[in-house]
Image 1 (cartoon, rainbow, N blue to C red):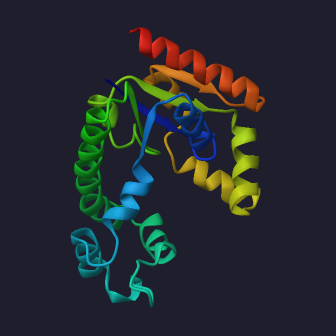
Image 2: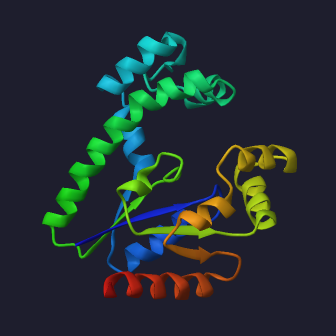
Length: 198
């Protein structure tokens, strides 16, 4: 069994690459989905977040108000660190459980999709890492379209992350997603074959 990390800049096409990998028989474990799972109402992480950030972040259906939480942490590094210290260890534990389950089910390649893989230093234990990248102009226009942002707002989100140049240096494989879906599928297939061969 090969365990592979998958990451990319915001709006670079990481989810599309994950779908292509899944169509090629890889198991996909999505860190974003796990992070939503660990903060469901009455889970330990949910309780810790409410205790730390107050009842005003709980919505009528008892789920967390992600928009309020994002606003709190966006310009407050201490609050961000606090939230991450609650969520990240639980996501990692759940990821390890899911990886074991997929390995036991006989998957040859298991892909752990993590948006902030390098920022969280996961590349120190998770190798190889595939990076999905694109040029900044493409990234900005995709983000504007996807999240209905102005160019300046989109750029602010891009600037808040580690640069794609830095990520390119840290990755084992880089898939450049500036072209057609066919081109992307061809690149993903080629990278998967290389990983299987090593």
